[in-house]
Image (cartoon, rainbow, N blue to C red; front, side, top):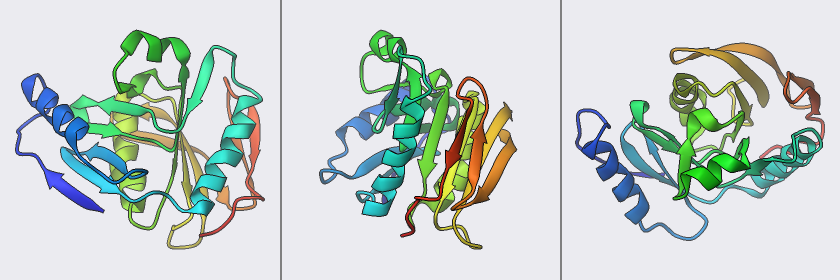
Length: 197
């Protein structure tokens, strides 16, 4: 992962606009993920096959329970200007109308109903700490972290009830366990098929 540091004191007003402009103009190889994490533009390589397989498995289950006017997006920019962040989650569940109303290349993270991040070897710390704090700070109601690179072995953690930049753990387990997502999803996610990197 490479990074471009942007010198600014707080990402608001013109500074946020400058940061977004740099993000938009970053020339990365096709398939790479370009994000702003705490004011730093980062570029991550394309995800592994196992990573993509997990995203597909989760997406298929979610489509069975979400309302028709919501979508599941794999490359949707989610902005958290107050945390100098513009993330590209692995999956974002949001009402379609939000995308239509916002236009451009991203939506406010707060408009998402659920964010799913699947760690890669090079970005696991971002997903566990910095992005979790950003999503909580934005008020994203549910954050599902699928961490195949956790020190004790692959784990899945569902976070909810955001307060400040902290979530409460609602459910957790190892690959192979079932994780329960509350309303408005009301489903048990069976992780038995999740591949390991």
